[in-house]
Length: 158
Picture 1 (cartoon, helix red, strand yellow):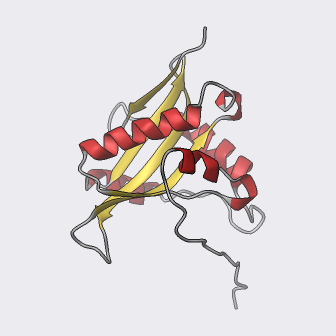
Picture 2 (cartoon, one colour; picture 1 turned 180 degrees about the vertical axis):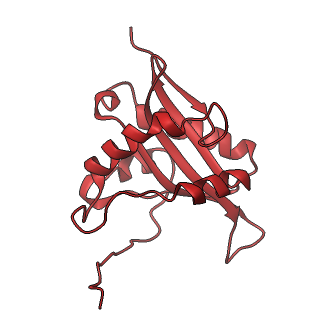
């Protein structure tokens, strides 16, 4: 029987998931990224290290029988417009296709995320969904309300 577990882990600290997450980050990029021909995958690991060192990064992982199969990465800070409200903004999340058909893995992941964010004093959470692989129903099922739509455009350099 396969067991899917969710836990808070470090990205960069000793014993963190940095090396283990590399193949998943690449799979995530291949699965969801737009404009792969124009924007190469090149994470700013030094910025992640800085955020983690400041206590502004929250990583919750999904493991199947101990193997890393997914993650959520949230960035925490007081709101820029509402400075009295401690907020979490989703940087990214991903679950490997081989676990997406298990018993509600997205819901279970985000319940673990919310538990950790509450422990850290977060008051408001912002999450998003790619329109070409929409998971908005997941967030609505968890009680999130759609509030905005973002648009993107690649600009020619020059």
